[in-house]
Image (cartoon, rainbow over all chains, first blue to last red; front, top):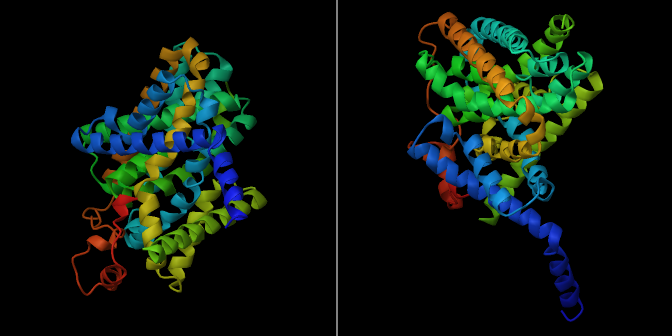
Length: 244
Length: 155
């Protein structure tokens, strides 16, 4: 005991040194913001209370108020980012449970996915041109609906800027998750497969997150849609964007 | 309670291992699919063989899937660094994103719903959260009851 006590005391002191204290602060802040926004979204469901947007807004506000740099908050990105992989793999379970439904919806889902992916890219390019945005901005914008890891790869192929592309992907995911459920309600899309498909195709990971909150079937469909649209866009985007 | 926590950790660890396998396959074969989606397909294939029962992963998978949104919060917070980039053309950029994504959402959602076979809305009953099942014959309910309960919601 006499030997180990000072050693563990040093270890605790080291753990509580600035870096780790910040990590604990960053993780705790994120968890608290998420818990609060989950409650808010249940009390007042609206685009502004969707958990990703609302938690992000709370965290950013707290960081800015406390003059904390993003670099100091970054450990939270490592901690929570680790879970994205296993969480995506986990979506295989609802997918397996609903496999018969999935097979029966295979053709409609595939058609919806391809038309949606082509039209969103086409509208983005056309509207960006209309607003007078330049080549590299336009090409980076066109990749906004593709999941970040793949979008950055495609960016290299189509002479888009990887950093800008990644930023657009994240903003778009948040906007899609915010607008998506509200807009799909307005146009009368209630089928869980159709909702999951639209969210996964348009808003990648954040769309899956939003769809998973609605129903686990929607979440599972959204993850398949994200994967398929990444494949589809990597084949289709270079053909379209080489003209701009 | 310790056993429960260890079981949960083991389940999440197994899902993580599948994710790593997926990452490896995606990079080795150079297929333009995110590695975690490949990992999901691996687990799906394993479940389809019938040798691997879904309840082996049910608790860990349920916990992760329900809080999927949480894991994206730090990434979105990263946008606070992009202020200058987004500031110059901010309004134009955001309106392009909003308009194109809205059009895509409506087109893909409506197309899929119109073409989907009638009555294929699926059952709303979740395959996760077995503790909330009311059927006392459900083996999961019996096991959860025997192990004592730490609500997943508490985590």
